Amino acid sequence: MPGRPDDPAPHAPASKDAVGVIEREVTVMLRRTLEQVWAAGYGSGGAVDRFTYPLLVVVELHGAQRLAQLAERLGVSKPTVSRQVTRLVAAGLLEVLDDPLDSRSGLVSLNGAGLAEVLAVRERRLAPLREVIEHWPVEDRDRFAALLLRFNADIDSGA
Image (cartoon, rainbow, N blue to C red):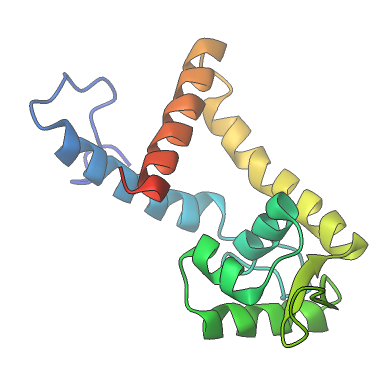
């Protein structure tokens, strides 16, 4: 709703404090996407939610991996990942394979049902985003995507 303290002006002038504007706008973006855009759409099974979906995506993107690798990539603790993996294994979306390099470890792997769920959830999550930016020029969409990629890559690299 316009006029709320956290709402930016649609065409705010360039700020002398770009970092402050970025911090505020990232906060608003996260809150709005979590509450308004992605609060639902994870399916009816209950195993996939806003906490376990990123785990499935990381396994889809990087393939089978140890719990410690998952925890590092997700920026959470190993016990947290372990609970999430257990939940997703019980739901039939992940499996734990023997690690050929370390008999004490297992490799968390996405199975066919897990891949199908990731693709279905992704499509449900993309629909509201498409609606938000459908009126944007293609160049603006591409630039925004490129800047988000750069922003997250720099965060990951500690730059």
